[in-house]
Image 1 (spheres, rainbow, N blue to C red):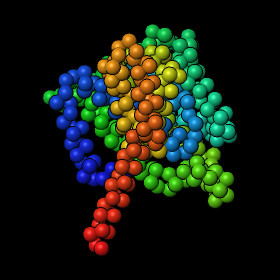
Image 2: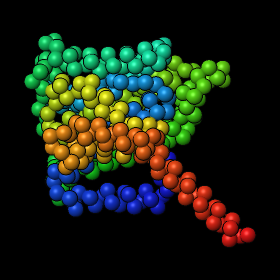
Image 3: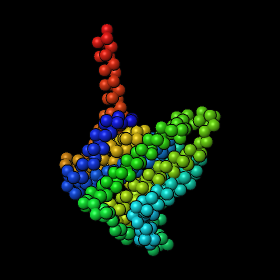
Image 4: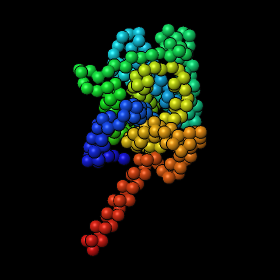
Amino acid sequence: MWVRPATAAVLVACALVLPFLVWGFRTYQLSFAATHAIAILGLNLIAGHAGLISLGHGAFYGLGAYTLAVLMRHAGVSAYVGIFAGALVCLAAGYLFGHVASRLARFYLALATFSLALAVPQTLKSRYLAPWTGGVQGVYLDRPGAPLGLPLNHDQWWYFVTLGILGLALWTARNLVAGRTGRAIRAMRDHPLAAQAAGIDVARYTALTFAAGAAYAGVAGALAALLLDFIAPESFTYWLSIMLLVGAVFGGMTSIWGAVAGGLFLQFWPDVAASVSRDLVQPVFGAILVLSLWLMPNGVAGLLTQQGGLHAVRMGHRQHGQAS
């Protein structure tokens, strides 16, 4: 689903004025929603476009967060360099893992990625890494404020930083999917044997897809670490990977823009569920999820695409009737 230029311009304008219209905590929540969207975007590339089952996306999210934290605390690098470094480290880790994944059948791949999600938090707690990672006590971070005397508070500045990175992530993912690489990974998903017969290097494209998806997760993890000002191994359990997958399904796994809807859903569903019943937040969440999947089997993006298609058909029939 591509967004029309006029619609995109309206959405961008609304996003730019939002932090001046809502109060501080809501701006903070919107920043986190954008962070979730970046991570879900990477999962959409892996699971939606390439058809690779991944239950360990949260592991790359955590790797990006700790890369930034270690570099800021022990190497004195800036937060912005740390975000870039988190992306590079996860890009390399995803590429290596992708080479292993290319040799595994789908269900074995699911187990391998789930094992990754289980292993990373325990590894971060290791006494051998504790001098760097802080062990179970975690790491505190100092998030910088707006530079050059800009009249923005911390939440507003990091909202714009996160929004800018999300925009760049959407643009790069769109170009990737629309290009030769995107066609290759979709062919690999839909007809793997035919793709191999056509000369597509399945192992290489699997590794590249995991690398790109992991890089997005690494950026999201680094941004989340800065927004929280603190990270600990318990922040990156397998439950995070499951929730990112839920967000991807809700938004639409094969849609680039659906990641934004998934990010908003992950951030604001607790508020919606709590407004229904504070004592039954998890059951209400389950009911909301089941209802949304029943009404939108292809996610929010699929619903919008379907509605757009129906509108186009109706307009075509109307014009045909007028011509007659």
